[in-house]
Image: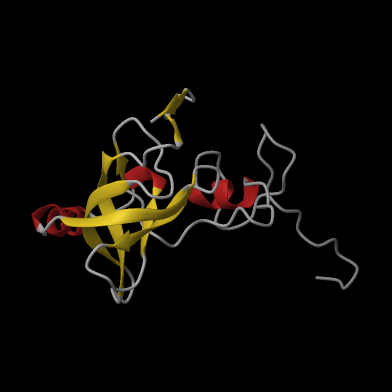
Length: 153
């Protein structure tokens, strides 16, 4: 074999012009999907907090079997998808994700709510509110439904 021999060409798929490498890139494979995803823009990082949809079954069962607490909505941002509840028994404010709000109204500052709590992984040292229900709308404020209608209370 001589030194001036051409290096072997990478394998190519008849459907694509991409060179093949090991592991072979196939449409639908995880490797293909990872390499084909567009880069994420700043501020669009995935949330480390579990939403109602991504929470594990065991965490959901523990939260459902826990006690119901009362509190007041400290602030809630529909555009950011989260807010905080001030517990009526005192203590640190509790995070609430938009997916854990039950009912037809978007919470506003001063609304009275009931909620259960769920530990936030991975260390389970912090908690977040789940199954949040507005029990009393703050009088004199405008409330918005999830469909966008404005209602005065």
